Image (cartoon, rainbow, N blue to C red; front, side, top):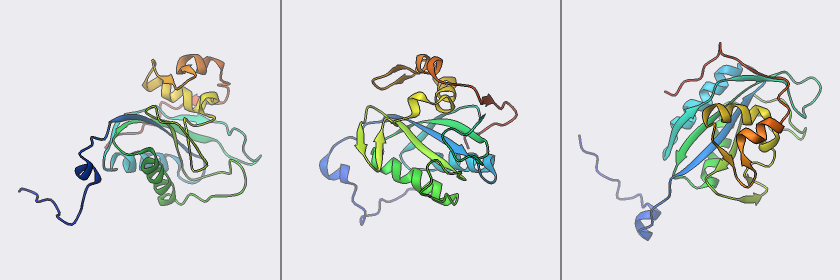
Amino acid sequence: MTETPNPNIIDADTLTGEMRPIRRAVLALGSNLGERMTALQGAVNAIADTPDVWVTGVSPVYETEPVDCPEDAKSYLNAVVTVDTTLAATRLMDRALAIEDAFERERSEIKNAPRTLDVDLIVVGDRRSDEPALRLPHPRASERAFVLQPWFDLEPDAEFPELGPVALLLEKADSSGVTRRDDLTLEIQ
C-alpha cells in the first residue's frame, strides 16, 4: 500500500528547503512515587514512539537515594536514554513534559518534591539555552552521579559540553547511595 502525503499539512522544511540536523540527545529518567519501574518503561516507550526521535541506548537501572529532596522522600529509580533526533530542543522539551504529564506528574512549589516521573533533557547536541523553560546543558547534571553513572554505562567516552569527559565528572561526583539494579531492565520496544 502506498501512502499519499496529506496535501493539507505543510512541512516548514519543505518550504525552506533546509535540512534538519540529526542531534544526539541524552535524557535522564527518574521516579520515586508509585510503580517506579512501570513509569520508567513507559517513558522509554513514549520516547521511542516520538516522531523524529530514534532511541540509540537505554542504560541499566539504578536505585538512588534522594538528593536535595524533602526528608520523607523515598528512593528513586533512575536511568538514562540516548537518542538521535531532528526535533528542535524546545519540541523535545515539550515532549518530555507531555510524557511526565501522561504519568500524572504533579508539579509542586516544593523543590525536588517526590514525583511519579521525571524526564530531564541533559544535552541536545551542542545546543545551549538559559531560558527558564529550557536550560541546556542541564545545569546540575554534571554533578549528579545518578545521571553520570548511567550515561557513562551507555557511552564511556561521552563528553559533557564545556566540562569534559563524563568519566572525569563521575570520579568527582558523590556516588554514595547510587546502586545498580541488575534485576531491573528497561527495554527498547
